[in-house]
Length: 77
Image (cartoon, rainbow, N blue to C red):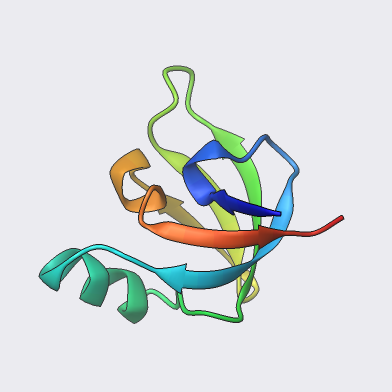
């Protein structure tokens, strides 16, 4: 099932299928290791929903909600 990373619930995991965005935002995501094929798990979400913290490639990464909306994933069942 395809789902944006910004729509994950805490504890939900998936595999990144594509990274959208334009220019600097997309380059920044790639530089942080947000690339297709990487497994990602939502660890926690701030009280107002922004930012979100994920585990990716063995480290914790905090993303803005707008950045997380650029990441398409395939949810693990």
